[in-house]
Length: 239
Image (cartoon, rainbow, N blue to C red; front, side, top):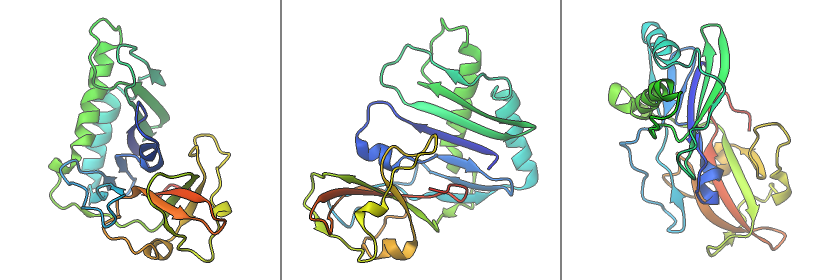
């Protein structure tokens, strides 16, 4: 992974945190996996689900990769940006995170309320440059013509106690609720997770969930009611 853009946090429901994923990832071979804002989520096959639009993928040639990285590092200021920016003029706003592993740099830059202008800030010029970069990657789908739907090979299943929707039966005879664990690593999800295979997800019998979903209530084999959410794992993610 040479570049990644993720945006999340702020005042949002738990289901959002369970399914949030980077909007744009560029790999060294030119593969891009991204959310296309012009592609709407499919209608849910279960009315209680909140379904996300599928990821798309496209391929950049070597020249386009280098051009994009120059734009990110030089024109957008990531090369000289500090680790964190907190403008402080917007409450409950999401935080944008840029991760770069290119040009001899390996760094992460986080910006609260990216794109909200604060002309009084001494950081206004670099914040404006990074906001433009954010706009470019959010709208990446409009700049490519050969995008296709990306099909994940692994999934992050999220399981937490208690749920509001009417539950359905536990679908996995060989998986227990205790198999979902909260990872101890820094930056790991703050809820119990399990890496799942496509075959395990197929057992759910749900259509149109390639982009992930939240809101499924399950009755566990222990008799407890659980909230289950699902999101694709990107190729470089381990859990």
